[in-house]
Length: 120
Image (tube, rainbow, N blue to C red; front, top):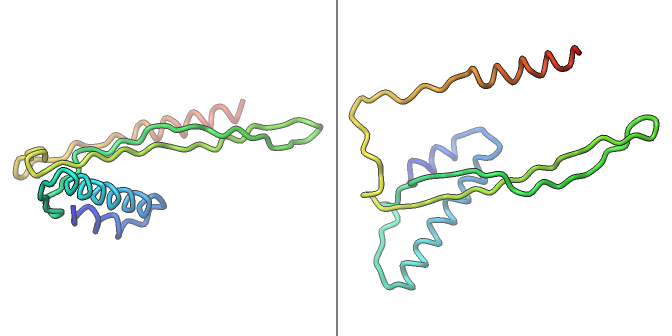
């Protein structure tokens, strides 16, 4: 858990502080829940089992354009779900196992689609 928090602290992404705050909140919730159930837990043994980001509600606004027209503005939001577990919940990773490679094709495909649409 400390490793994840330190990585988020060093990450220059705009969402990193929000995700860090969310993980700290999930840890505090787990500790409080354990106190209510009168179970002892060690904060250092928590493991992030999964983090999911789902689409939330979209606020729809309108921006005035030329000749009395209007263009939509979509202010999107999201729901982030963090699931914590104990050390037994951590997936076993083989020593020296390579991580799966990410494909850049999806990103490039979207950029090409935007370029071809704008030429039209």
